[in-house]
Image (tube, rainbow, N blue to C red; front, side, top):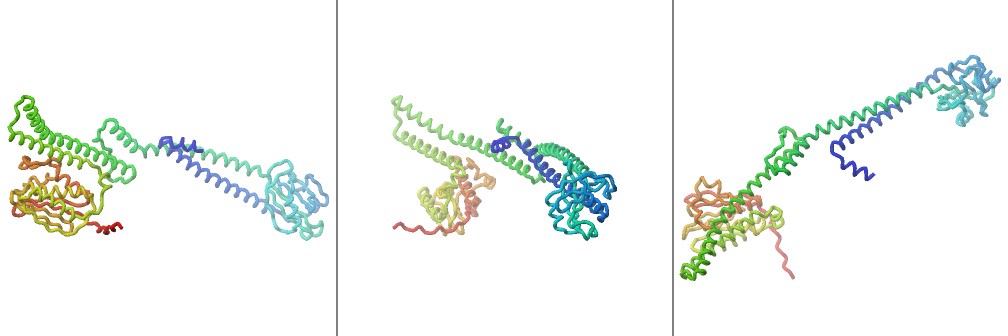
Amino acid sequence: MNRLVRRFRTLPIRARLSMLVAAAVAFAVAAVSVTCWFIVQGKLYDQVDEDLRTGRRAPGPQIVNAINNCSETPEGTTNPFQNNYLQVVKEDGTVCVLDDSIGRVKVTQADKDEIKSGETGKLYFRDGTDEDGNAVRVMLQPLTTTTLSGEIGPNVGLIVAVSLKGTQNTLEDLALILLLVSGVGVVGAGAAGLAVARAGLRPVDKLTEAVEHVARTEDLGIRIPVDDESEDEVARLSRSFNSMTASLASSRELQQQLIADAGHELRTPLTSLRTNIELLTRSEETGRPLPAADRKALLASVKAQMTELASLIGDLQELSRSEGQRGERVQVVSLEDTVEAALRRARLRGPELTITSSLEPWYTRVEPAALERAVVNVLDNAVKFSPEGGAIDVRLTDGVLTVRDHGPGIPEDELPYVFDRFWRSPSARSLPGSGLGLSIVARTVEQAGGQVALARAEGGGTVATVRLPGAPVPPPETPAV
C-alpha cells in the first residue's frame, strides 16, 4: 500500500488529477448504480408480491380435494393460479400439490412454524426454490378448519409461488447496463479530468517554463501574462512570480550599481595611497629622503586615506547586512541615551561648534548599534557642513528627533537624492565622506518603522527630521545579589 502511495505521488499532477477525478466518478457511479439496482429489485419483488396477493382466491373444494387425495405431483385439473406453483402443506410438512401446478416448491421449517401458528388470513412472502432448484417467490397463507368449513383437519397452509426467472433476467440485464454505463462514465470522467487538468494547469506550465527559462538564462525580465480581474490561486501565483522576478531584477540592478559605485569610490583613495607609498618607496630606494615636513604631511595623508577606506568599507558592510541579521539584535532602546552618546562624539569632532540639545525620554524598538550609527551620521553631517563657530540645535520630542545646522543648506533640486547611495552634492565632493552615511540613516529608520527627511531650514542651513515609533518602556533590571 505504501509503495502504491509513493508511486502515485511520483506521477505528474495531470495524471494524479485524472485518476482522482476518475476514482471519484467511479465511486459515485458505483454508489448510484448499486442503489438503483436495489431499488429496482425491491420494486420488481413488490410487483411480484402484489400479483400473488391480487391473484389469490378463497380456499375452495379443489384444495379440500387435493388434501383428501394428497399427491406430490399435479394431475391436470383446473388451477386458479395459472403458470404458478400451487400446493397445500399440512402441519406435519406433508405436501399436497394441486392439479395444474407447474411444479413443487420446497417447504422450509419457517413455513411449518407459520402453519402451526394458525394465524389465518395473514400472508407470508419469501424467496425459495422449486424441486429443480429454480428460484421462485413464495406466498404462504395459513388455513384452519373454519376456513375450510370443517372439511379437513386444522393447521394447513396454502403455498402459491411464481417463478423469478423473468425478474432475475431483468435484474441481470439492468446490472449489465449499469456496469456498461458506469464503465463509460469512468472512462469519460478520466478523459474529462485529463482535459480539465490540462486546461487548468496550462498557466502552471507557463509558470514552469518561465522558471526554467530564468534558471537557464538568468533573465529576470520575463513576465507571465495575468488577467487583472482573476483572483484564483494560479493568478495569485503568477503575480507573486512576476513580483519576485521584478524584485530580483531590481536587487540585481542595485547590486550592480552598488559594486560600480563602490569601485568608483574606492579608486580615488587607493590611487592616492599608491601614489604616496610609491613616493616613500622611491625616496628610500634612491637614497634621497624626503624633507621631514613633506614626509610628515605624506604620512598624514596616508593615514587619512586609510581612515577613509576603513569608513567606506564599514559603510558597505552595514549596507550589505541582511534583514535576518538585524532582526536577531532588535530590542527596545532609549532614544534619549543614544542621542546623548552621539552628541558626545559630535562635540569631540566639532569642538569649535556650539551644540545645544533638549531631549525627552523616548523608547523605540530597533537594533542599538544601527540606531547609534544612524544618529551619529546625522550629527556628523551637521558638523561637516556647519561653519566655524556655528551652532547646531538638537531636539527630541515625542519620538521626533530634529537636528538643525546653520550651514549653506542643500539646494532644492538636490533634496530628492540625498539618501541615494554614494550620492554627494557637487559642493561637498571635496569634503571627506563616502556618500553612504545618509543611506544608512534612511535604511535604519525605515527598518524600525520610522521616517527620515532633510529640508532647508528657515534662515539658512539644513534641518534633519527623524521619526521613530514608540515602544513599551522595558522593566528595570534586577540587580544581581
